[in-house]
Image 1 (tube, rainbow, N blue to C red):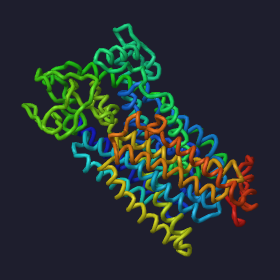
Image 2: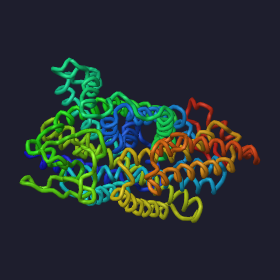
Image 3: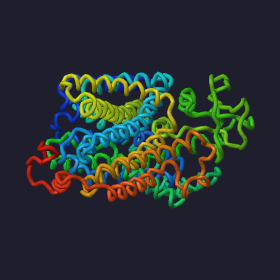
Image 4: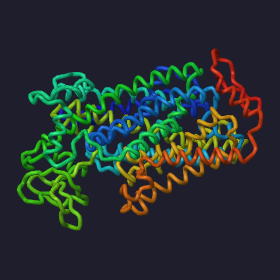
Length: 597
């Protein structure tokens, strides 16, 4: 069976599985739609959390970034991993004990303010739409290559699938779908990693292969990469170009941004008890670690394969995978010196529409203003393809290539569904039910949530078609926004009972506004200024969320001490949330209600 047919088969079977699960587990109430009725087993919730958290950025783009930039790419690995530990250990159990539906629910109740709730909803929408843009972009990339449709069509197909199981199933349907998606994505990531580790190092365990010698060279993987990179004019793979302060700020923004991501936090509201929330956090960390400890090895193997395959190779003698990816527009070559060989060296690549054809058909040659750019680099490679193209470059069987396609789609769709659900619940529950129309029935609220999800999917699709950057970079912006807005409000809401609504609201607005403005200016308004010489304190837009967080903390602390302290029952609530629960007794919340612990 051909690779194309295998891909259609694998993707079709997995899509059918997702839709079948959504029909089986469709939500019948707002509780099931928002938090799956708080009845998800810790192991299932751990797998769903892993799928929700390991997005297209983790599956598709993270190893691609590390593959291209070497040591500098480790900030994503450190930040996202450390952030999950911070969330699981320091925030999730307390939020679960509070027992609300959403993060804006927590902010509104803890800070006894509808204004705080509305600001939190705005933050959710900003963060989630920024994040979901990367997921839809990932969907488009996978479809454009493996199903031979353009990226726009791929995004539209992905929108349709997500619309079906997110709108129908809500959190209940999404949770069980994400369990299946985790199994698909981790199998898809590990199988080619094991194959390629065997081919390059002879070691079947990628994590160990990463530290082994490349077969027949007497050099370790990193030594081989350093040598290949230096020969082609690139910086050595183990060298870093980022300043220490920028590495620190990006890592911190990704870390605390993870701890403030609403679609991950809400996963801990779906377990029956606080103890189960802690257990699911541990299981999720284990499931996540499988992929994250493998990613550096995959990045290194992919880079070795690419450099060995294309550098100084004759274009006409290249394997078929090269022309396959050219047709998707995600890799390209222009023969600047007309010698028929690919010179892949350090220097700017090029952009534009494919313009050159030969007997093989469209070559994907890219030009600017109908002329090659200056310099000698003749190859353009979209870094988001490295994980997806790796099995083809290594010459693995067709079923492995089909599997990686299904895994990439699972990674992107799982997180996209979680984000879209957070957006819809914030609109229907926090904005509509808690503010604009408090008397609507449960059935009307559920309908509003589904309508909001549908609208969110359409907007997300537009972001996927017109993305503001490569997948992991877009996601990094979302983490920065979360770090600057939600994290301080949640952390102080749990551990600082003196924090009041005036301080929290002022801090969220200040942090979000500063971070958003900084990103927009350097990425969109004046991208020519986007270099270290013009950044504040040498901090890139990817890391500016850390400074936004500091601004949030500072503004919140000052304002809260210039205004009246919170009511006594709110201070008592904060004390109650922090008390470890040895049983499943209900924890009191504002107004005499109870939060199921």
